[in-house]
Length: 117
Image (tube, rainbow, N blue to C red; front, side):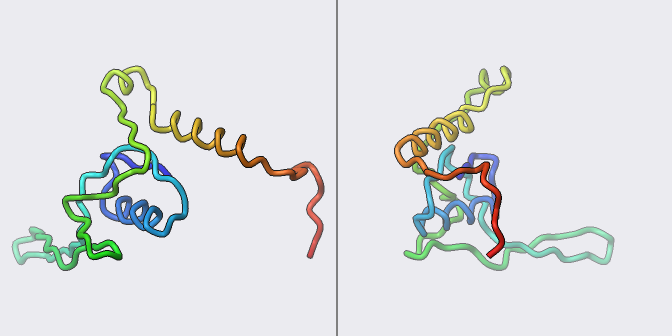
């Protein structure tokens, strides 16, 4: 799973839960920790205010706000990478997956027709 500093809110909660449940490897950069639920209220002058009403915690009680999701493999895109249109996080994820496939290949004929059950 990929996450980075541009991921926030549910995009921080999901990779954090993914990691805690040991569903796979999280790759990228630590998120910023903007993990808090808010609701909006309309003001009589037409304005709007937002109020936080709940936070998010890990199973062990660690509060995700201001911490965020911490990847297993940390990869940062530099400003130069971004200017050149490179994404080292995706490149690392593909490299990681290719290594995993090489270690644990599946013997499956993807060209075979799918038979009804």
